[in-house]
Amino acid sequence: MIKPFRIDIPQAALDDLTDRLSRTRWPNEVADAGWDYGFPLARLKELAAYWRTGYDWRAHEAELNQLPHFTTEIDGQNIHFVHVRSPKADALALVLTHGWPGSFLEFLDVIEPLARDFHLVIPSLPGYGFSGPTHERGWDMVRVARAWAELMRRLGYERYGAQGGDFGSGISTALGAVAPEQVVGVHVNYLPTRPDPDAGIALSATDEARLDKIRHLMANRPPYQTLQATTPQTIGYALTDSPVGQLAWIAERFAQWTDPRSPISDERMLTDISLYWLTATAASSARLHHEAPRGSEPCPVPMGVAVFAHDITQSVRPLAERLYDIRHWSEFERGGHFAAMEVPELLAEDIRDFFLTHLKDDHRTATR
Image 1 (cartoon, one colour):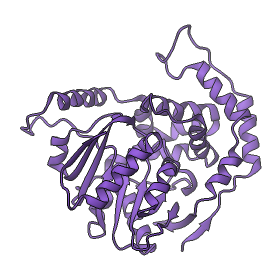
Image 2 (image 1 turned 90 degrees about the vertical axis):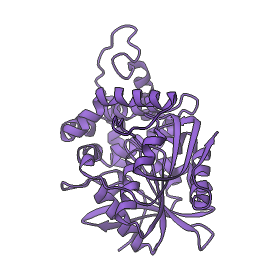
Image 3 (image 1 turned 60 degrees about the vertical axis):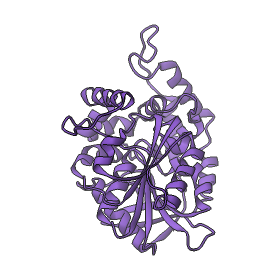
Image 4 (image 1 turned 60 degrees about the horizontal axis):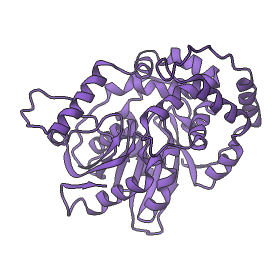
């Protein structure tokens, strides 16, 4: 059963947040630390003070409630989603999937331009936000993809496309694998390509540089990823009990993964962080890092790839083409990991271009 949903955070939860922020126990910081030891103390105090005294959750809640929200239960798990129908009755449907530390909020700025041509289904991942925490093992990317296939079936969509970045990329390709008869194509704005010494492919200097960056990341796994992949419950205690801990944990990712030319506003970032805090989903969202490596299947449907210059890594096309049926490839000089929030106009146009032209215009490469 699909039920309408309205965001209505209890005032007691907002008062508790304010109280906890006012009682923050701050660590010291060495002189001239900068980013050498982690998130700078002065910047975090600035964000915490604004979250406590200037940020207005109720205003953002009212704005979000202008969207059509729903919930349904799939595979024993509550699933929250936004469903926006295009004025074009015969429009193709797209399921848009976020990652960590994002949420359905990532797609707010692409809804209007994409809804002109597509019906949009924007779920919250199991364990994230208004989907609420997961309660059992096994919610890997393939299981999420199967849940999305069931969601789209319940909504009456027989054919649809999938789009995502971060975890949303892996879930979208998994959706193409588990529902190839329904998924017309997959568009991603994050597609890791591992070095393959046996590929026997001549690569450009640019591609070799990208592989060097990937090798560095593989050899130096980010600390947040290690903790969430190995002990998500342990880190979850701190993040669920301390709003400043949750703030630093996510704000650091936004600071480091975005293009400096397209920063995400403090308002939007705090709304995303508030969503994690107010739903107490720090631990359950982190569990996807623990489960994710267990889910992987080949994606047989046509794919479009958007590569953003300031993302964590940049895909190497010759290696990607060995694994996927790439029909569309775009390179962007602006934008980072949160493309839908940073450069929504570029991402929305690339998504539209892929789904409306990819069968007629193979292997396009655009630089913008």
